[in-house]
Amino acid sequence: MANTAPAPGAEYPYAVSDIARKAAEFLGEGWGSESGHWGTSGQIHTPGGETVTIGVDEEGELYVNGPTSLEPVWLDDESAPQSLAELAAIAETVADITRDIT
Image (cartoon, rainbow, N blue to C red; front, side):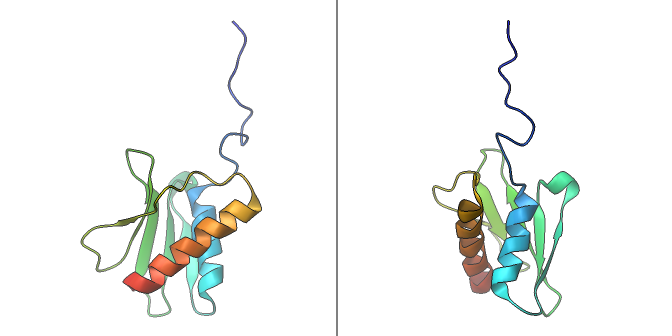
């Protein structure tokens, strides 16, 4: 049987941490970001030092969880970005959510 697995990086060309980094760029000066383990999560740091976490739940849905959030905010109908334009669109949504919960 032939190997039908996609080439490394082909199925998911961007890590969740890439979304966090791009969202921090959209948020502007004073905001920062860092990668979680293996890029499977990301943290956005507010100018005041609080941390917002971005991750993927067990059902494969992207979520944003703030420093005082009781429940994370899930992104509706977002799938893994396949292009820089898709990455930017998701990151913009994450930036908007981050502003709302911090």
